[in-house]
Length: 71
Image 1 (spheres, rainbow, N blue to C red):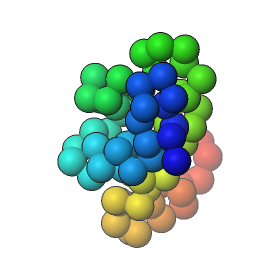
Image 2 (cartoon, rainbow, N blue to C red):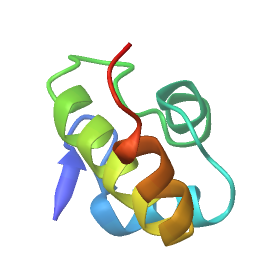
Image 3 (spheres, rainbow, N blue to C red):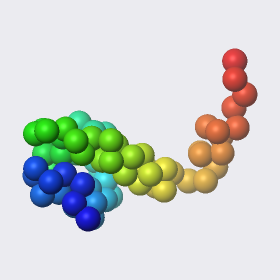
Image 4 (tube, rainbow, N blue to C red):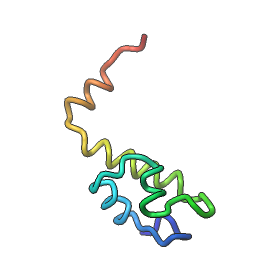
């Protein structure tokens, strides 16, 4: 599915870029051009980035971040 219609960037291309080391919206913009035209794709691209980065983290890291009590 296309996430960025302006630059013809699919969800697969974004996932591939993340797997190859893109870890921020800035990196996705520089590598793929996501968000550099109309900007309508930014929310979906950011959500996809977040989901993929969460999948890459070891479970213990996620639990540690989520289990910390509020200060």
